[in-house]
Image 1 (cartoon, each protein chain N blue to C red):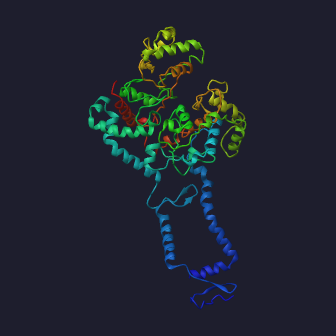
Image 2 (cartoon, rainbow over the protein chains, first blue to last red):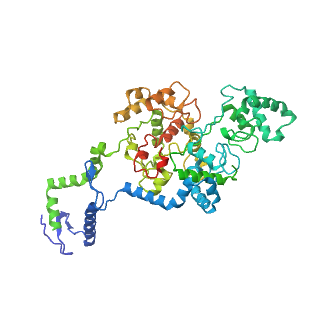
Image 3 (spheres, each protein chain N blue to C red):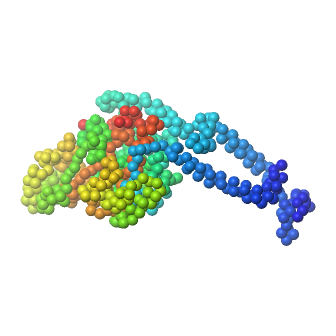
Length: 293
Length: 250
């Protein structure tokens, strides 16, 4: 095998390998590619000295630039907080009345609140805050627990029916399923409740049932929903006389609510958000509605 | 002279084989070597609990349905992620994840801290038809989960397999796996108390899918989703959790 044989046509050396008279040229790697490889290798080796690179058992080479992703992100987050601190501290410390009176600050609340709402609340209450079956509409003036910023803050912070020790609790029992009311009583009381917001339903035909339902309501439901069924904000019992419903106001849904009960769940945000974020959202949601207390 | 060096190397059979082995093992070494010191490099979280059998079953469903293809479980050390999802993920938080489900792509949002963010009711509605609650969602519907009975007869074996891999399940947990799975989804049943006994009081015992008469795959998946990011609060305790204002930490 002749190694240093030169190919007469190209003038290059061959590798000395031959297949059926064809010899392989020993063409070197193009200079440009080689240079590129060398430069990237030098770069890589230099970079080992500048950034964290090699594991050393329980530690690692830290690098001359002192780059650490954990401290970097912490600094960035603090930077962000500082950028926002001008109005964040005001939102944290000032009274709700003072903030509501400051139109410029409320503009910030509307902008930031919209972002926070979109990320955290919109999944249930909808991006526009109008809610859907099972999730209250936040844009109207009909509140379960009150629409003042302080009350909304409490709902946000501790949630409803959560595991938080300070949670708001609202449990509509399953009167039908758990046997507290007879099947017929469930239907009657549902008819009565339905008639409250649908006067047309009170026909002679239905009157007997509605009257029976009124009695059931007085003994069973009035304790929470009030004697005139207008609800109680302190205990989150909804007003049953208006046209606004959490789960639906048709007769069938009311029967289902009385039969199976309702235990809605609003998560607690106390640990998930900062004070300023919770207060911003409380104001945002208050502002979404008609501003009624 | 690179040419001469290469020629020499190429012509020494043993030397060339050794060179190939050295080059090819670099990839393996950088992945394997850190595992030798994993006990010293990963943070400790003594408060961390293991997945309950129901959550583990939910995790298996998560894997089976390929949820990880669109959802990551890894909050990176970037400001926007920390501000949106909470403290960045710590290694210790997935110490019982075998296999880990960090994921590498987000079509949907990150789920590392989704536990407790929404109600069970929402999760069920969302899994049955995502468009019902998030109109712009392009996630497939998983309504069949609510109709599919959860298979529990092999849950003990799943726990035993995890135990063999080093997850600290006790033999008692393995023996009661199926019973605990029922107990966690049926709060009023006798089996329910065993769950908090074995897995801690903070374990959520609830009729996850809203039906306390059947144990479905929906129960399992929702139980799993509701515990994501809540097995330990290591990430919040860490001094690094600067996004938590000090007064909000109590």
